[in-house]
Length: 143
Image 1 (spheres, rainbow, N blue to C red):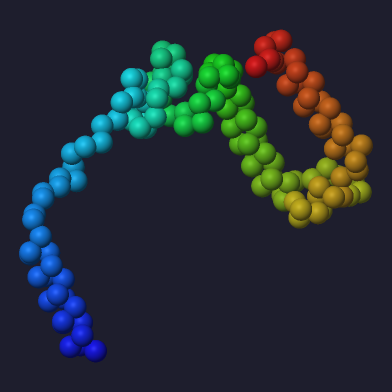
Image 2 (cartoon, rainbow, N blue to C red; image 1 turned 30 degrees about the vertical axis):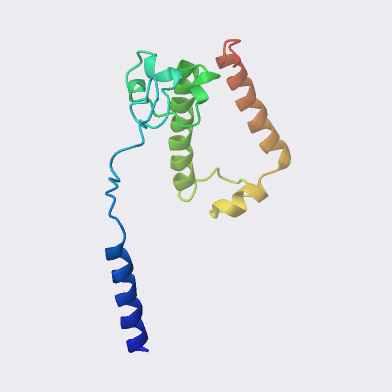
């Protein structure tokens, strides 16, 4: 087995040595012809948010090009709002273990059971109030 590998290696070396050598440089050749590259991903074209003059948007990180059909200011406002809601939800998730409404019939300190023990009318009321707040805060700007 080792003899056949050595023979094969020797045969390969003699075949390569006998052939004319052409030097091919791997670093030359391909040139990217992007007229306006993104700052964050130079192999993609720059998204519209890169030239919006907003702080932080000049990095140009928008690989899905969402800023082409969504207003970047509206997207930033939505991101801030959802981040704040998540922070409040985290506080509520932790605090409901320690505090409860006195005499509430469906109280459970387990957050998974708490959702199923809440009456459906109460969940519908929460969704309705949040929908009204979101609808009113949008100021008739739909994207």
